[in-house]
Structures are given as structure tokens and as C-alpha cells.
Length: 389
Image (cartoon, rainbow, N blue to C red):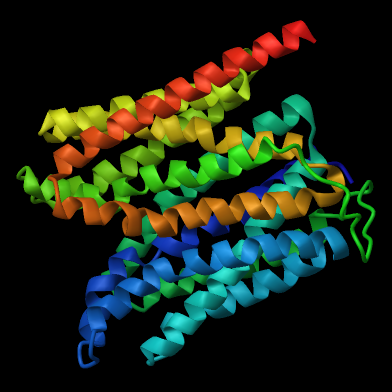
């Protein structure tokens, strides 16, 4: 198997793109979907739940999937997940019961927890060093670009019917034959029934996990609250609001593609320091700006920061995790990623009862500056310890 072939790389990237499309593809369908189920009590909240429901199940599933693929291999579970993804994802097209649709969204989340963990683990299996760094950056860039593409397609199709965007979840049917033809179990993978419990990753891996959750708690306030913030400063056009949110994703593409070159010059800790510094500038711009132009600058900077930090976390975990428990550790990474997204509104939204949007972004600016400085200090200490040794 030639892991450098375009077929292998394309297949891995397409599998990775299933993660981002799982949650946002049906965003534009929600208003009309709410009307369709308006006869039900609490219909609006139930419909909104269809958007976030997969995230909870991704978080709950990923760590279990990671353990499973370390014991039994990557590809059999991947093929099954691709099929079930299409079934669960298209539930909104076929079903008229909101609770059954929610069950389908839960199945979708379970499948994403599996496919994302396997895709990232296979990247770690197939590539090393510079190649791994470069591909991890491309993976995040493609996921971000896929987010822009699928949310745009979902919006166009939602103008026809709120149900039509659910058909985009048939996309794995195209990927399935490619996965069967081009992806192979890693030759170095020794699948065993019982993994040696003595094999453990360095403790610093938990710093990466917790940091990934914090990253997403902070960053996820953008898609959740920026629309309301823009309305509060007089921006009424939904098109402009959509452009603002999409721009953060777009600029994360650029920095993800630059990740490998930046990582060649800086340590993992320093890259996190740079990423958080860019996010701090972003939140300060939003807080003090009070205009659409300043919010756009904030979106640009936030996208650049997250575009660096996501592949940085992935590659660091790939490097730290022993081969025998690589899937388990990447599963944990995925779990902390989506727990951050799930917890973000739960943790941050109550503060809006105490302060304005501008004040919240200002408080978060100071918190993020502290995180940036903390990682720069860690980078300096790590460099000194290497010199002494």
C-alpha cells in the first residue's frame, strides 16, 4: 500500500470531512423545521436540539471507539460506521416524528465519533514526522472548507424544502467503496484481544486533552453568540451575519495549511501560545469594536488561531501516544474536543445574564491572554530542561 498516493489521502480527507458536516448541514432548515413541528409542545427547543445532539454522542462514543479499534483493527468498524452514518443522517428526510429524528441524530453522532477517531488514527499510523505534520494541517483545512461547503449547500437546498438538506448525509455512500479499495490496516498494527494495561502515554497528554476542551469552550461562543451580538450593534442582514461566521472558518483553512511550516520553527507549547494570542486579539477586537468591520477582523484572527491550535493538538497526541494505545488516546482527544463544544453554551451563556456581549468578550480576552502566557512559559521551561539534559 502506497500511503503517499492521492487516492489514500483523498479518502482519509473525505472521511474527516464527515465530522464537520454532521452538525451544521441542517442549520438553515431549523426555522422551517420548527414550523413543521409547531403543533408539538416545546417544538422550538426540540428542533434546536437536533443540531447539537450529535455532539454529545460524538463525545460519548469516541473514547469507546478508540479502545475498540486498538483491539480489533480500524477498517471493519469504519465501513460499518459509514453505512450507519447515512442511515442516521438522512432520518430527517424520511421520518415525520421529531423524537425518531433525534434518535437518528444520536446514531449520526455515534458514527462520527467512530469515523473521526479512525481517520485521525490512520493518519498517525500511515505518516511520520514532517509528513504527519503537513497532513494533519491539510486535514483540518479540508474539514473547515467542508464546513463552508456543506452549510452553503444546506442553505440552498433548504429553500426547496427543510427535508432536502438531510439527503446530503448520503455522502458516506460515495466514500464507502473508496475506503474499501484504498485504505488498509497498518502493517505495524498488532491487533490483540487484551492490551497491556502497563502501556501508558506521558502524563502531559492530559494537558493536551484538557486544553482542547478549553479551546472549544472559548471558540464555540462565536457561532452561538456572534449572530446575537451583531444584531445588538445594528447588523440586521442575515447574509452579513453568515459571512462573519463563515469567515472564521475560512481563515482557519489558511493557518491550518501553514501549520507544518510554523511547527518547524516552534514547539507545541509555543504554537498554542501563538494561537491563544491570536484569539485574545480577536476577542478584544470584538469587544472594543462595536462595528461589523471590527467583528470581521476578530473573525479573521480567531480563525487563524484555531487553525493553528487544532492540528497542533492532533499532532502532539499522535506523537505522545504509544502505538498500541494510539486509537484510545485519539478517541480521548475527540471526546474532549466535542465535550468542549457541548459545554460551551452551558458554561458561558449564564454570564450573559450578568453582563453584555462586549463585557463577556472582554473578560474572555483576559482569560485567553493568561492561557497564551502560560503556554509560552511552558515552552521556555521545556527548552531549558532539554538543554540541561
